[in-house]
Length: 407
Image 1: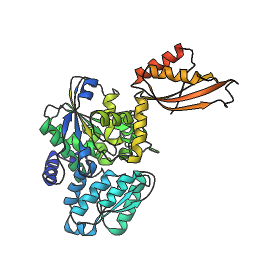
Image 2: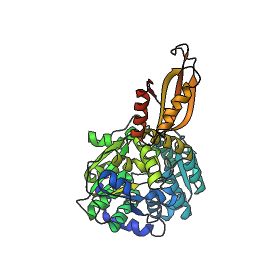
Image 3: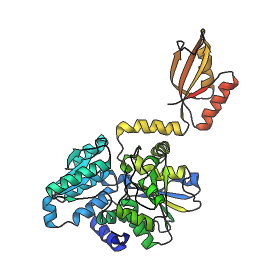
Image 4: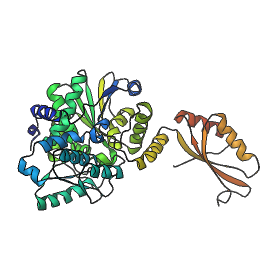
């Protein structure tokens, strides 16, 4: 299929179909990100969409395009989570049976929610691609319609409705920053945005550990990754789609990548400053801006927060990663005389700069610590990297030999 398979007309028809089903999510300026980057930065909150992600748009548009015979045979899909929920809700709303194949490592919250929307869930394989192959196998046996997570014109058209909302509400938008997994979301947005405003820039963002679109774009051919590893499970795709690749090559201006630590920091920033719960995949655009991956100033930027379905068991780990990345959580070790009062003196120094002690580990039994001395390991909360550096310099000035430990 060529990129011309999806048109602005398809996306406008999808927009009409979705009225009353998908929410028109809010777009609010982030003063924090605007001041940080020297732009006007707006956040399109698809994390507040029905099912907690943008996927309901493409799934519902696909479901509503089926014939009566196709509906009678049901639908099947493969998904790491968000597409699963979109298909499940869309199918149930239309009175259609749905089966979803999900990777065995899919977040528990997404598996539970998918079942709650009425789908039959099968856990299979280690990645989306493994689940995809299993779903095709089942589809060949049952005759159900396969609803692709990204490489389908109807799905892409549904996702593209986001661009219509963005340009209707903020017509002065100059950049749209979009998370990229298999490429369906950015394909729909790019087709619509470029048709309505040819000079607009559409930038994709991928996790460094799952950068199939980035690598394929660099190689000028679809390139399958050997493996994927990222906290952004919603975009952990080994191989971009054929249709989405052709659209990206034609319409997308650039694709950049971000590290997991940067994603974690972005999640924390959104939680603290914007009061928004956003999953890893949804936060990559914010991470790209925060870490200057996109060279832009004095522009109107809309960043798409694509989803908010983050596993509560993962939140604490991500927050911890974010605190570490922002210099607000450190672990350091030093050696002190094994005498009464020396630990108290060390802690008084820490307290003097208003650092908060989380834990203290006192060890006199290490082989590399001399008799009469003890190693002290401290886990500390600090305000930021500058505050942490201030504390470390003070400790060194007072004669402590400081070793920063990995957390």
